[in-house]
Image (cartoon, rainbow, N blue to C red; front, side, top):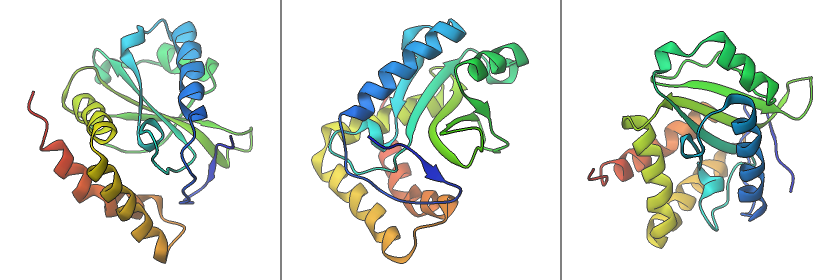
Length: 176
């Protein structure tokens, strides 16, 4: 299994069960370094959807009690587990990444640090679970991804925006 994407690169690879194994390995590392409870670290994104082609990056959601109270000691614990805080501005989350080496050119993992059991946490978990249980939604999501890649292999933000309408449509199906 080869993980990693360069800056602004968009590329899909075929699904592999090794993604789940990698997530489990990283989850254990995170628990060891941060003392976070197991239920606060979840595998999300396309690598968590069985059979889904995905960017070769493992997405992990980590729930904390209060995102506004995340401090340097916790950030340092993530660093000890190999993750660096990114200067990414996203509402309701702090983003960290793991890289292939110390050139920091190729990302292999993302942590999306969010408020535990709040809206964003619930939406991202729901999206993963919904696509894992709904073949038609999985197929449509893959079509959307491939449609973007017909015209470009760069533009991570554009790629995310291209999928946004579908993702938000799935969020509306959440009933809790």
